[in-house]
Length: 104
Image 1 (cartoon, one colour):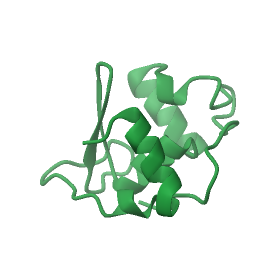
Image 2 (tube, rainbow, N blue to C red):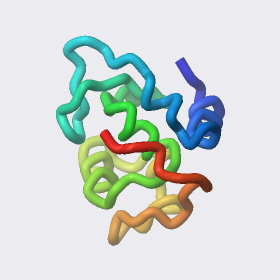
Image 3 (cartoon, one colour):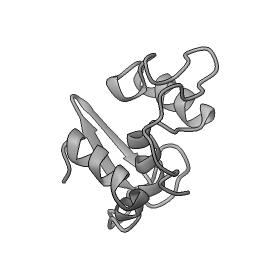
């Protein structure tokens, strides 16, 4: 279990590869891709995401389609607010430094 600061640090260290080694939860599937998922919890949200998707969320490098899907399903929340993503295009405008933490 990582708190928001721990999650951000995991993305910055080792280019996010630690997140890719997270164990997925049996029978839990990402709401974005349907792949094997871990559970992201923040405030009153619980979002099943693949380790790669979680890495992109933490690095603020979601694809526009991922950003839109999360916003449509959950509304605006801290990790996708307009300081980090352009609400019109879904493009990241404030990614955390470092390489993309990985694909699904």
